[in-house]
Length: 301
Length: 258
Image (cartoon, rainbow over all chains, first blue to last red; front, side):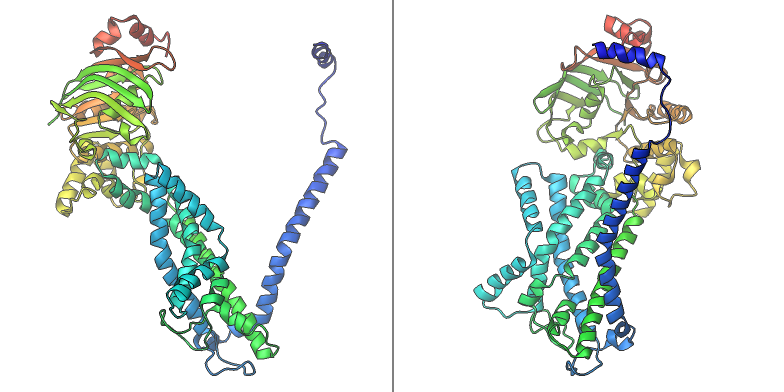
């Protein structure tokens, strides 16, 4: 009580202290700025170093047209030449098939969770998706192996790699689609119901088109993530040097397995090819990322 | 075409909470009925039960009867989607569909219900836009996105969209509250024209608007916060504003609360 009256009398007597930044506050500000910039530099440095190293060591091979058109058929670790088209095609094909399976399942699950799910089933599904998000890629690969190879006795093939990658891609798509669907304003749904449009039609004709570019971005980012997953490939997708397009039998090459194949090699041509394959994989993922951001920047919502 | 609505002993719930109690009223065809009352008294809630939009909210529940020309909208075998095709609604904030052109927006109610004949769709689009007083302003840009219009134009677009499906009744939930005075005037003139063809119910916070636009006014109020809202008085607009019978109505009209 007394302090209040004291302060009241004091502030009546003295003018307000409005002078500029005090010395110690300015110093703290500078220290904080330096610490933050240093942290940023430490975080970015390894990334920049990786990109620089891979670009310098593998870049020259990418500039060769034959890198993009030839496979490794007939090339040994000792010989220079050949290309990575078998691996590039394999990565893209498996990515496309994985997307073709994961996208409908993921998007429809998200639609259920956002538009319909109110009760226990929705909570269970949401929880399961959360768990799936954390499953390590090697466990996904081992799971598919144990079901199809051990139990059913089938041979390893690219389709099983796609199944393992689907397990990893579905939770990403469910979560990102969920977020985009929640961003669609409820008043659009209400406007549609008020016109006498049934709920399922409202979802497919109004809600999904409105969220479309965001959903596509989520899919592209999910795809970029799983294209680099190597553990399922090591378990389920043995390497080959030739171009392969049969998903159901035989071996198919991918960029990660191409890199893995020659990683113990000391011979320069093989080492060059590994760096070039690494750069190719990074470039492919970068393109998908940029495409995703470009589409989302043109979003209408 | 326009039908009358008779509400008998309507109780509206959100889950277990009774929001509105014991509403009974008649809404005559080809006239404008205004719902007025302080915030939270349940006017929008009652409006939304007239086209079965209240049950879209999780836990939304209705007891009582709403009769459209004698047909109970809440009978067991009635499809809510069919009800909404007969009782249209315009919302407080204009909400044109962002991914559709102006033409597609107006035709949305018909297209999404399976009408494919291009000729008929174009005729309906023109008729509805003329009916909403928007045709002259947009006839040259029907294929541009609906979101590119001003607020007043967007609201008239939403009205065109609502009347394109040729409902019997048009419900309007504070249609001008998000608009500037000039657009508001345009929409009030529009309501005057539309009432020759439709039954119109309008919820408004603006008492002067209710006095300008409506033939009949219903005053809703809460007994206390947490208590359900009730219909206090229903009478012709001139009676309500010049000679109300209930004291609460008179207090609200003269601005003593609200």
